[in-house]
Length: 375
Image: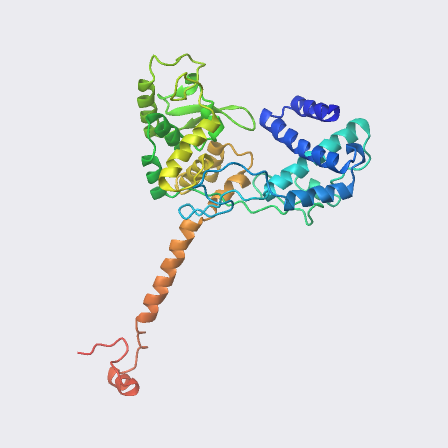
């Protein structure tokens, strides 16, 4: 489609990442396949087609994938992590992204070519989309009073961090120094999975105890502090692969274990992580390590919220604030301790008010005086 190609070229010129181009292309492909099925040209699509497309995404099941016989059922909750597996239907965030991609495609052609005259996916009430045009990063984002039509409700973001005991079990399940070094860097720097996998040898600074990563959004170079253990595991890994892989400044740090040696990509790193999950029966993800790093740093009273924001690379401090919310692993023990204190308080007899004689209370209640001495 010429119209789609033109739009993607516009995104590329607007400095969109390759991942964004890929995701938008897939969403537009789904939209055009829907229009082809109902035999409607894309220029003539209207509110009815947008409604039916939104209903299809909400009700239709995702294409089936081949699964292992012992794989959990879609939507099943893992008993160890408390996290549900991906469901059979498209998540609300996926549907929101599809709507945003199609809407931006039509808005581009309306502004550039004046057609079509109507965007199938309308914007929110007049003025609602500009609520945060001059947003103060120190204040929370204001939400529109009314959602745009066919816009799924935004689910509440609850970051899932790995408890310390579960992390120790996970680390013990790793089988090589490369994986131990990777996980140690993830948990101490809070870097995204792709950011850490893209590190070259020139970006390592053991003398400063930092590692340089290219940030996902800004694509800026940022040197992140890492733990001493991470560099120890890295040194052990580098000794194992010495003289086996190129060691120039621009060469990658992380390599595959099998020959021929290649740069370690995200899918391969995820599969390595899944092997450890299979041993434990859990379903932690690489991104959970980033959440865990954020929770650990915020638990340190010597680090401010702005410090953690800088380490995580968040553009707005309100994004970092979601990690200040307590998790279920933190709330449940606190509430159970509260119930235990209440039970202990109820079992302890109250102390009588001063001025009452113990023998009078004993005669009145027919038992040992409350809070008194039976001697």
